[in-house]
Length: 164
Image 1 (tube, rainbow, N blue to C red):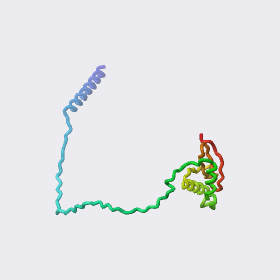
Image 2: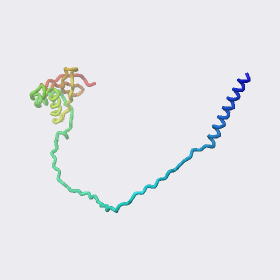
Image 3: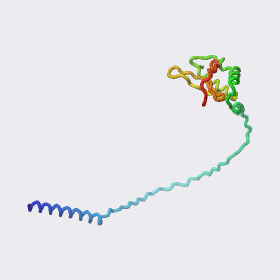
């Protein structure tokens, strides 16, 4: 029993000494700050003349001749009636173009018809119908509240749906 008490007292004294040493060292030991200054010698060479350049803006009037593609400035609008659409398709010749499987196919017809419509002042959209391997490009128009599809390769028009 005496040995256990002696052992506990020894441990308590060691803990107290450690704690007091920690507090003492923390309060009295400050890190040393060392500042090092190094002088560097840069030799000067002979003076170099500097050329000062002043920028001057020169404005010269020139005549600009530019051909204006007037169809861009037309008012683009929807067809007023199915009759107006059919008459326009009758005079348009996209359906008379010759198709080529590898060069000029359904999407080319649809884009060409759309381009001709815009040049004439009409809205025509392109639509991709079908899925997977069986896809086909056609056009669509809005007349009133009705949406019609157009097969651009033969000008066939059919009612698709009401907009609302």
